[in-house]
Image (cartoon, rainbow, N blue to C red; front, side, top):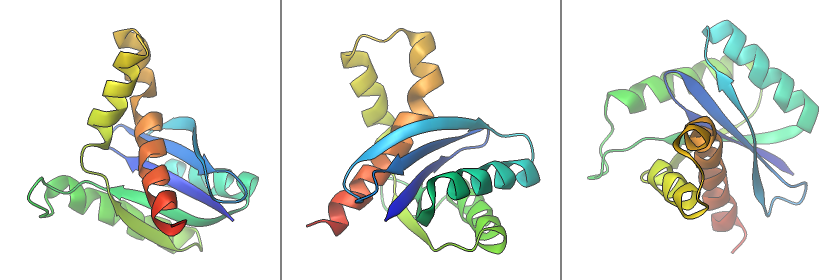
Length: 137
């Protein structure tokens, strides 16, 4: 059971994939957003390549649990994914995943430039791993 994890932003989409058994998440790439059509095509290609069965998308909630403007953008893009890629999408609370990703990379002593390139992919990995851990209990 391969699961795709997404950290959807305005400029990039961080991508992570689970191992075939659905236990471990691994970051694979970051899509530089150009247009919804091209973004969907890239996601479709990744889903086909890895034989994805489910998609987990990070939902950026406010700290009080409410949905803000960025959440609306993510939900809207996930609706596009549903229309174009016939896979179930699970929305996953992504609060503080980018903070955790940055902290982990700081602890690994990565330069600011490397952190900037990797943060979305690492955040997608945290989102996906959180989901996988919740279903493997």
